[in-house]
Image (tube, rainbow, N blue to C red):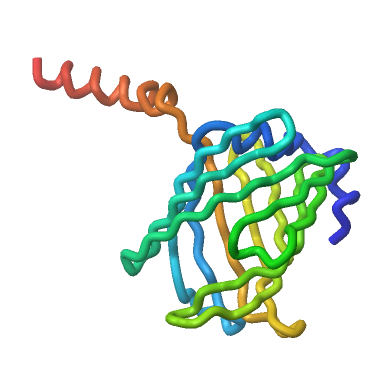
Length: 176
């Protein structure tokens, strides 16, 4: 794919806008044979200082393991971004265009008790309604190890209370 193919895509994705505040994601990793190897959820808190987006990520894996990661994503000119976190080797370099974002990076991936240096080819697509779909191809020496699939959604206390209010009214009306 070419990022410029998404130039007119809506809604427009700006990482510093989308990830500001609270975001929740769920995802899974499928190996190259299509088998699901791991599932997870992650709560993300994003802060923006005008040039750097900080993403504090708290992961919970299906086996009960937890992990924390902090990204620092710098906005550059012309829709370009550069990201750093402890496990990224060098920098993650990407570009946003329309409703899409694409970046590539090398990552020290923990596998059991060891670490594997893997390459990520990561695509994100903002959908109407605030859902962000993410697919990353994970490879080593050009050989695909698997794919990472993630769905992000915005979580806000005001949205939760709006959803809960009709349920609370229904319960109170039923009890009366």
